[in-house]
Image 1: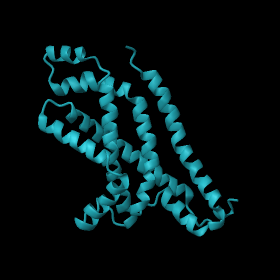
Image 2: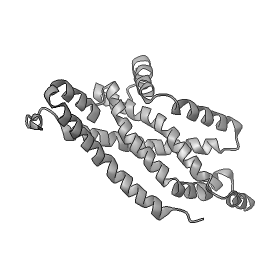
Image 3: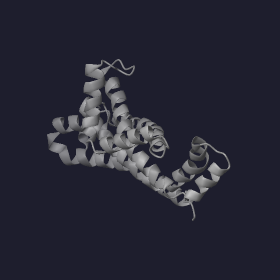
Image 4: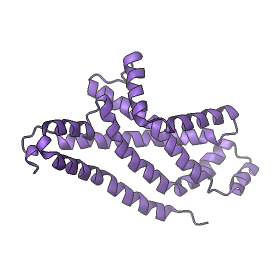
Length: 224
């Protein structure tokens, strides 16, 4: 059934390695960007709150394919921005990371905002009474508890991000979905085997993540 893998024509492990890197880099960037967005959403500055609210609501409700392709058309083909890449595959990979960060950061923001809502308001008020600034209250009191409360939602976001990396194939990033498309075109008589192979690959990528973060959510849960 899997005889087509013996020819060495397809770099299956390499494609999934690109998918793993795409998910990892995007996850780190999304966590940073999502944290910045949630800080702006709860900020006392109306302009920052308005920007973050508008950004989250617009980008979160925009199809990811539009965001990814928009990065290619707007940044690369219009503004000639390559993000340091020389080959088309490198440029596609980096633009895909940027698009995934811009998109997934909105879901990280909302997950963290749900975690912030679990923090008793009295703790922030007590911190302000001690003379802490808004930034100090957020960084030292609110966000540490919000992250603990939001581990489970963040795990779901990370799993969704891993599956969303398949959209990067639309701009030529050489990840698993890009290779699957090529294999479907070349191996028409083994379509079920191809689908089963890639389904198993994504299960291997996402199932351990869900199990580990699910365990961490129970261990780190804040007892109220």
